[in-house]
Image 1 (tube, protein in one colour):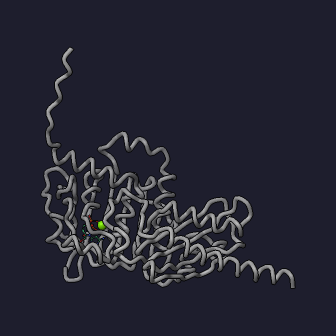
Image 2 (tube, helix red, strand yellow; image 1 turned 30 degrees about the vertical axis):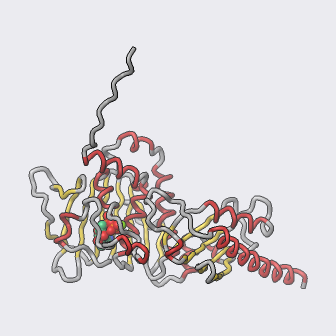
Image 3 (cartoon, protein in one colour; image 1 turned 90 degrees about the horizontal axis):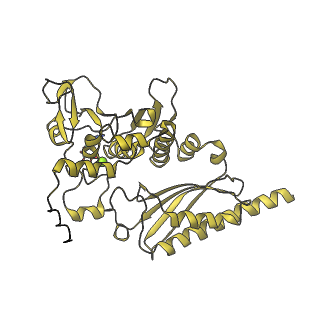
Length: 355
Ligand code: ADP
Ligand code: MG
């Protein structure tokens, strides 16, 4: 038999492209929340409030008191690659905001129902707009899609409903809303520890008590205490180490040898971005091994400031793992420093018990 003739190659419809991209960027509610939290911080907010229903699958609402969005920008707000943060590729080297690629709101609008209410300081009212597939959409059939004036405080409220409503297999794959809630909570507590000066809170829709909250004025240790508990907070060592040769500064808080739990909690920030690195985690776990009982693990909050020329921020948002230049040398210096601090505390403890 002659080989089957190949099927012709055709360009995908833009709508299909956008929906595929959206599903890659927003894999679970936690990814939507991370993007929205980062937008609120980028907008200079000092209060960020989150409400969720069914772990964020049914509802994810985030309200901030940041600078808001100009009414005139609302028509292109959710288009792909529209941003107020980046202009030239070179600016990426020195960018101070979390966002820059203008993909988050676009993505969310392709896989959820999205409502935006926002007010800037020079506007006498707030504006409300609904989005679907990157574009303004009427709130009800038959109405106009134009943004409408409404009452509202300074800042922005983003309401995301029915995440993955149009990707049924993805939606069905989420078995447990409480598992998603735990992940959403994990995202917010990480940022709450890191972003001093910002108040964060999260609660479940319809429940009176908050799941977690921290005041704007809370200190670093207060933040760790609120988010990770008093047992962690009372055994912390503050550390700081750096090296010009490798172009980095590391600082943070790590538990001493009195604290030991089944699993490591590592809050890792590289140039203020919450990231993951299995290399860093493994090195830290090895460092603690000789100080903790068998199977014991620490809590470590580590902020790395790395010379922007040595780390690539232009990684796709789906890549949670990061790498940087001279990773091994930097990690070793940080771990050496931690080891020394741990040894000091251990000596003090031994000394105390002897006398
Ligand atoms: P990016 O953050 O990469 O620019 P996003 O899709 O997350 O892309 O947001 C698009 C734009 O919408 C941002 O550049 C910003 O101007 C505006 N924006 C989004 N969220 C907020 C917010 N909470 N407050 C003020 N402006 C916002
Ligand atoms: Mg963003």
